[in-house]
Image (tube, rainbow, N blue to C red; front, top):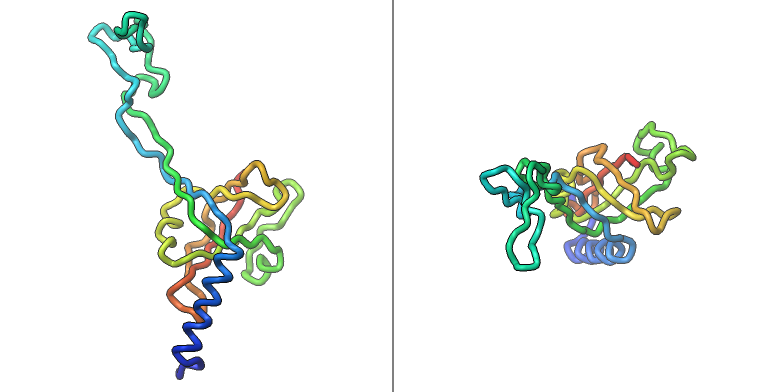
Length: 172
């Protein structure tokens, strides 16, 4: 199929898409699987007591027969991994019908479906994420949490291989 636009027109359209994305996108927090690291608070001597801090003399204080409160005695601690990226967020209900999504927008869980648009370089990060936290319009102080409902795809016809769309379902 012949190209409908010249290279200059495609560049201008691409720049326009970039400007629109910069204007309408917002910061979203991707939450990944927690990373397992060695517990830095876990200093257990041979008698099985727990290191509870530093005493007045600068030496360690040990409490006998107690597990570390950070890791529960496993000596492995889970550290949350997050990353902030910019995504264009759309909660419009008409898009749910247009995309064939059946989840209803209810009063118990408003903004139940989220459709995000982002740069294609971030698609791998989105696929790897466990959840997404974003500020919804009705609640500016407490972010809503979403899980990925559909794999990110590039379905743009004019500016190809630059943006992706992802569908999210609200979990809180």
